[in-house]
Image (cartoon, rainbow over all chains, first blue to last red):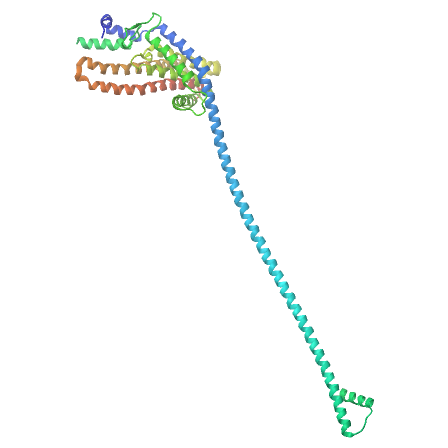
Length: 178
Length: 254
């Protein structure tokens, strides 16, 4: 502790010092007012105004960013579901097309089969009819032949030369009778 | 006994305003008669604050970092938790610059008092009184400007109170206005003064008792840390109460 301070301390009694702690000092008050007002003006112009403005702008930006993010998320979800839907629809359609084509092919196959069967039937009937006709014809020929042979044989047997025309008539009568 | 006498005087001498600035390794700086030590501290605080907020605070950066972030945190806190909550959305935003200036001004003065070279200007009732006067001004003239004379009257004459009681109530309310201001002044002044006195008394024990009192230095360090907290707390309380008082006057029905 230097001597100056000690001398000063000796000069001031504690009660004096204590009272000086609470003495009103109008100069100090005015100095505080002036400096505070000056500080207020300067800081308002150069600090608070831009800072608070920037804070508001940032809060606005943040709010908008969050909203945007939310919106994008929703859109993405929508797109996802739409894609899902489209895929589902495409699958459904493919299945339908496949089913239709299967059905169509089955129909066509059935039709072809049916037609083939019909054709075969017609052919068979034709063949049957032809066979029948041919058989009839052959029977006729056979009958005529056998009649002629019989007439020949009978002529030979009775030695009577019969008129061929009359013979034939006779044979036809026989044949028709039989 | 003479030692204790000297210590008491030393503490009081340290706390009171003077015209000498004791710098380390230098002879005491004699200040002019119009400028006391606390006045010098106030001016230094103003310079520090202007420097910090005009040059240290990066206003262009979109994502604040480090120091700017810290300051911004406090500004947002004052705006949202103090101004808007106590005064309301619109008036709160309008008064935020005033409250921010008050908070940072008091905080700087409080913290400067913890740095050995500087002195605590907020331990001077003239300084705290001058600051509380601004609160009073806002409580009176701010309300007159915002609500008009009728609205101002409403703050003193609550609705639905019988006429007879008003004779008692109105003077109390008016008196309360000044008591609130005085309480603001004394709270800050007394807190800052007491904290420093405790630290000085603990360090003074070393002067009185010598090496045996060394543990009290550790205690003084702890109180010093507490003082840092109190510096923030008192700046916050002063600002919060200013906002609350103004809010009460602006919205008397609540």
